[in-house]
Image 1: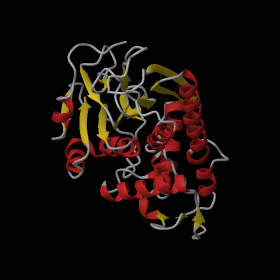
Image 2 (image 1 turned 135 degrees about the vertical axis):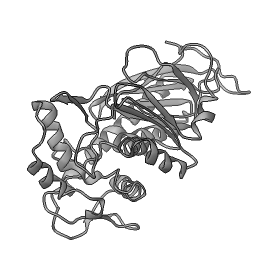
Image 3 (image 1 turned 45 degrees about the vertical axis):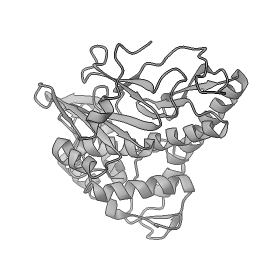
Image 4 (image 1 turned 60 degrees about the horizontal axis):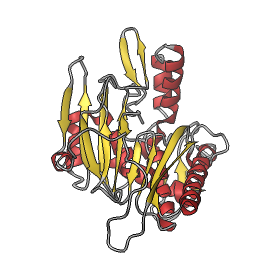
Length: 344
């Protein structure tokens, strides 16, 4: 995901306002997991509970990285990829099953715009960003022959997955962090902490709001990252994710290519865009941000309008001129925005 989302959060030592609610202090913890700084902000009556809860949440994210990582050769995901072409059912954990099952569902709903079998093509573009050279047509054709959500079967009831071609490689970069922050927030709730936020490099889940506000103040950065955000939302008990190329892109022969790749063509996106999604949970928001980026404004918003629990904001500059699109539900989301600048 692109680092487009910027959160400004409020100060410490805030008294709970609900009748009978104990005094709650604001605590913030940061730890690098899944190759990004993970930030947890929570309100707790005591430091001991806050620390134990945050440590448990980070441990859960670390455990998930060991299952869902494409980079770790020992991860459960990589072991699954080593079974490619066997045609047999490979048992997988509950976590990997949950992620793959939703990924396949969205792959169908998005007509292939979201596809976790995209790994072979993503590897080509990682090399392109390092070397500054486009993949050759032959390389793209070979990689694309291994891509297609119909090549991955996930048992809808049991925890099995089947990869149908040899050399297939799954990439969960567009969904794993969203699932991880969901799980981390769930861990905090088990410690009795409901006023909390978990942010993984722009994939963010929000619990109950701070004691003195109706929501967490979330700022959405400009496309060019050249100043403070122009949009500030007040959100609680929801998830928000942004996908874009403000940070991750490569320019080759005068053309800008995003790190986000269209699974249907094998090419990096060239429209210079960011997509922000608000959804009931982080996994859905994360995956939809990638899918809508690939689909573009027209088809992307058509997908969102079929999901009334979600809202989308699309900002793009395909020819250097800023264009903005939003779903019907986005207006009500922005209606919750608070006046004034975000607090530091």
